[in-house]
Structures are given as structure tokens and as C-alpha cells.
Image (tube, rainbow, N blue to C red; front, side, top):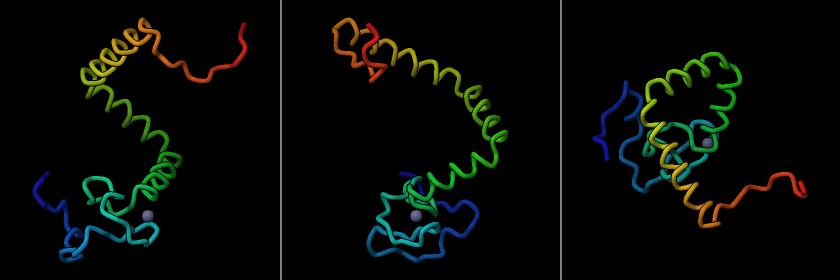
Amino acid sequence: MRAATTMGGAADAIPTIPRATKRCRGCNRTRPITFFWRGGRDPRCKVCRTRYMRRWIATHRDAFTAWQRAYKERNRDLIRAYHRKYQRRRRALIRAGKWKVGRRRAGSA
Ligand SMILES: [Zn+2]
């Protein structure tokens, strides 16, 4: 794991937590540390984080689109490699007759 470096303060507010739990800043509930992203460093639990991100994206549509575009640009090779691997696996499974096609419109023929 990473060293316990603080990223700009506020991380040391709680001393050492006896059990691996943490209070969520969103819902105020105490959750196990596994409920938090970034190895437990996220102030919001996963449920709250998802809700928060949904709202943020809805209110910052343009910024999110720009970020997404920049991300794809930055990780072009990584994404390419991922898709290549995925398609290779998919084709192999199709050949083996094991590719499960999702529930498309039933009764096309
Ligand atoms: Zn929460």
C-alpha cells in the first residue's frame, strides 16, 4: 500500500482508529473502511460518493466531458490495449459458442 501521506491536511483529524471503521461525511454513518474508495481515504462512503459524483456530473456536464476527453487522450494506449484484449477474448468465446449475448429484443426472427 501507499505510505500515509496527507494530501493537504484534514486527513489526521481522527487519531488511529481502533477498528477499521470510519464515519462518512455524506451520510454520517460509521462504515467499515472497505466502504470507502482510495483505500479508506475518501471522506464519503461508496454510496455517498456515487450519489455525489452523479450530482456533480449533472451540474458540471461540460467539465466532466472535457475531463473524460482528456483522460482518453492521456491513456489512449492503455484503453486501446484493454479493448484489444477484450475483443480477443470475446472472439474466442464466440468461436467456442460461449459468448452470452445480453437480453436484446426477444423474438427478432
Ligand atoms: Zn455515506
